[in-house]
Length: 115
Image (cartoon, rainbow, N blue to C red; front, side, top):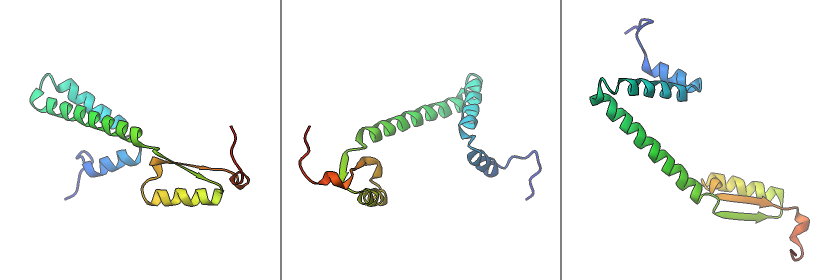
């Protein structure tokens, strides 16, 4: 089936929006239109707005939980090479955002630390 220029192709349109980094503006525009029509057609507009509110709340809660639990481990290393290896290993294990990797010059690896 050939599409005319006036007929929407939602997959291509969506890809264009995503690739063009215009998704935020697109979603905002759609929600504004839904909100504007909610008084005239509440039976279909209100469920969309409710779903959006629920998704936003879920996203906020997930982000807050992620921020609360991230950076739970601090790794102290005395070599830039070791620090790079540690970061690579943590990334490979999916734990990079939960850890802080600090590296010091290897000269600091000998002797006591004094405050």
